[in-house]
Length: 360
View (cartoon, rainbow, N blue to C red):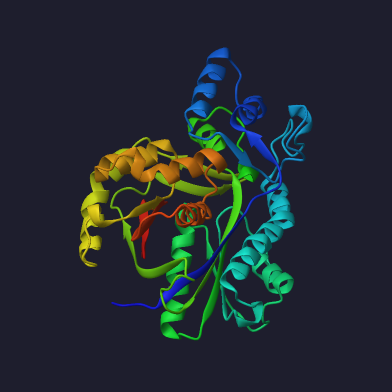
């Protein structure tokens, strides 16, 4: 089906302070390791995470002695209440920064926004950062709000599907989509492999899109052609994200790469055929970097080499896994570097589920 839905602007935002992966490992090690053997394995997990540095709202500064860089994590693990308080204090500013950039790039005045779609899985409060966006950006008080909550790293693609539906239903609609994640609030204490891998990967950031009806001309970032979703059977235990007493906890089974390798390609090829495409016809891939093993599994399943996912690898290295906004950082970098079209954006989430979008 033809579509005139387009992404007219993209914005991203990061917390002001940054930490190198080696520095993050030094800070986190004190909360996880009790023996020299654990310390050696801990260092290996951090080095293999594919992350060189990341930004975090818990940092007070980017320089100086490590013991003074943050004070949020100390002897006792912060409670979920403590973490949600910091989320409430910090999410709005990042959301506003990313959204303002997207609106400015699109040349869209805030009074034109008819729908607001927000995305987050790393925190909750109400009134939420959607209300902060309405007030600080001076959106209409009558803007239609939709929140995509707790869907994991694929949430921005779920949000994009909703935004497209709004525009297809009424071409006069202008949708502001904003994804915000503060994953560094969920650092876990103790010796647990899943928790340590998550600690080594996750970071903070925000991304925003302006989605509207219009011609696919040089002023548009992308044309939104189609979206797709699938739930892989018998994989509920492969990935999870749950609320605990001391933050949100993630489990990531060692089976995930094998599940991706065994199930992804037939589904992906079938979906692309519906649009007259094969794997070789895709100009660029925007694959969410859940971690280096996820990217490697995707490469193995599709027969693509690392170069096809180079932007995903570089975004992971530069910023870490920011969960849902990460795919927007990848799309932003692809278009700035002149990535070939069409583009397939794809992410995995609890379920085990796959979300994808075809952009041109």
